Length: 70
Image 1 (cartoon, one colour):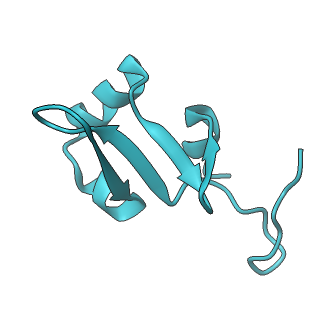
Image 2 (image 1 turned 180 degrees about the horizontal axis):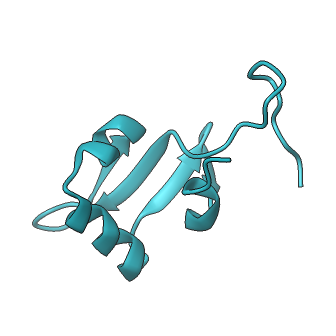
């Protein structure tokens, strides 16, 4: 596994974009800030259902990696 250490020598963790189901069909793309502004219940349901697709620098990453902060 390659670790990006470009941010001041620290490993780059988390995600910067997430794609989730949109109301009425299709999907919607959200920034990290937008996703984290959603109600907790909605965010958790995306994680439990496995319908959230997380990305870092345009590359897909596992939800477990996206939720890692340390």
